[in-house]
Image 1 (spheres, rainbow, N blue to C red):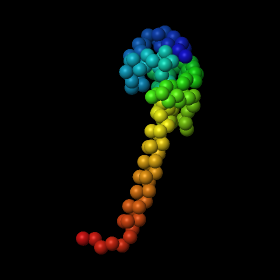
Image 2: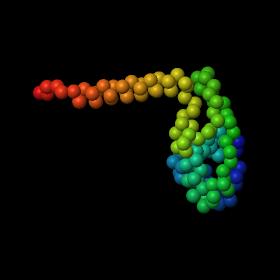
Image 3: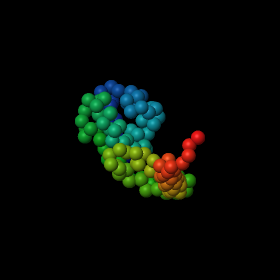
Image 4: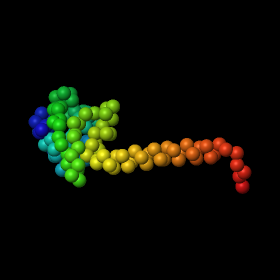
Length: 128
């Protein structure tokens, strides 16, 4: 869904897409996709844009529509719900489940290895 309110206020205030892109630390083509609704604008970006435009977030904010993202033939429902306000999880919601599972398994392995090494350090051993 196009961000008509954002686009209208940006133009009314005389700012270019490049200027807004600089504020949220992205390139102009990515910002253009955000403004056209193809790429999600995260909460932090809405706040930065509103401060730059000197308006309330409510004056420019428009809800995101649910989308289906296709990545390597794996459809992933993308509801754009925020996770604890950080936006971290929603930025990577098109990663295949198999990769996420692999990373979670590796994190578990590393945690176990950390515990093993901590125990090894605690045990009395002769040091050279």
